[in-house]
Length: 215
Image 1 (cartoon, rainbow, N blue to C red):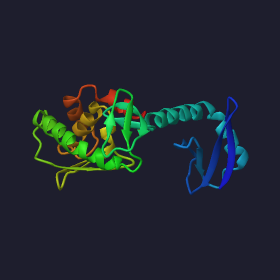
Image 2: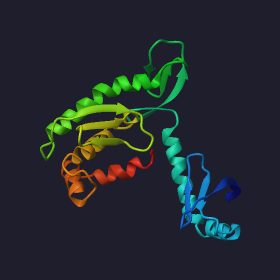
Image 3: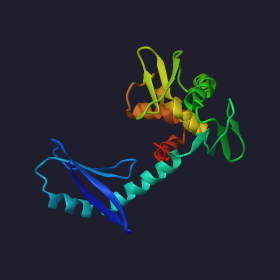
């Protein structure tokens, strides 16, 4: 593993090179604003530096995208609103217009789960009852997931929703539910699958794009 620096407007961003048996070189920026280069050992240091220089605009765009994600995930979020966290010696949780108050040992995820249990089921039932195609009864699970907003197990007819959808505006929750229900009809991402999604949410592409700003 070799480390370099990528400098933009006087700001240094670390570059980490990871050697793998890839045929091609891949560039990405992680949440720590570190540029990660994955390539095989046939790439010389000079060739890697040249590619980074050639891809400078794309890298800057990725850095800015990660900065937006980091900002959208910092602080306390609930149903699309962002609050400043103020620790207070209280047993429960309190809100005002801009702030949220709770003790330092307050179990936020447990509170999120309690709010999500009722809200997610209500939205699931409402969407399914008005769905454009007939779908079988489903079971709902809620858990934290790092890479997916929802999962549909077509065999057990179980839809699993990411707990952290409770942080976002409910329009994104509704999109994920519409998406996962469509898998009960087409267990893939074919044209027919997306047609079912669009039948139930005409502007779903807008939500998909917006969700990239915090996932």
